[in-house]
Figure 1 (tube, rainbow, N blue to C red):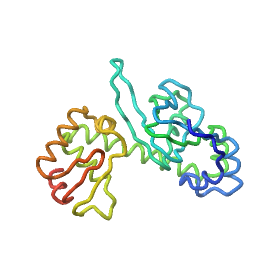
Figure 2: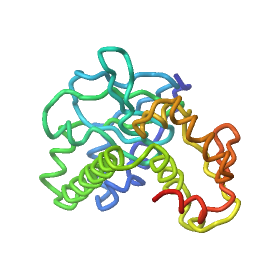
Figure 3: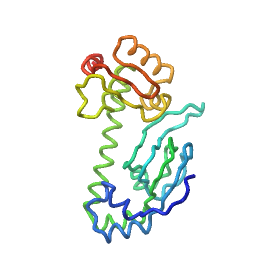
Figure 4: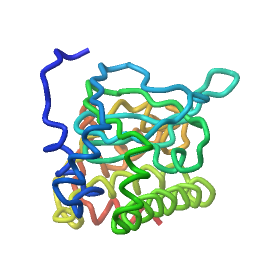
Length: 231
């Protein structure tokens, strides 16, 4: 665990997009029912089947949500980064967690209690709309993922992923680079590929001169040429 330096929970909550319509007194009420969680790389935040008593906000770091099969293989559902929240839908359903959450890097999270959320939802309908919008975006991404797994080849999935990771200003760029947020095994699972298949496709794209792999950094000599191979 990190050294436990005190943090200003109210100040952190004011920077969360979900709460940016709330008044200071509303933020203060939520902060009283919010606790900080310092997670070291590899720490499990919760297991599948654990009860859900609120939702998490990721202040910094990286968290993966995943399933584990009976055979022990892992399927990564989502890789969460700074500013993202997770667990809202399960919280509203009053169901136990259906995935496990693990820190991919040292992370700081806030856990907002269900009771505090319910109380503010009764007071502020804007918060309700924002939480619904956030869950709708998550569902839309899930549908996009299912479409990709069902209709796109492994090569198309990887190219699509690399293009999505590019900043908007570099969508037609030359000699740009994407840094993978975590190791290739986790990215492969996120794209519903084996690590071997993922590495083989990266090698094929390298042979075609479309990318240059340097550890986690993927150099793209021409975004336009790479995009032509996505279809």
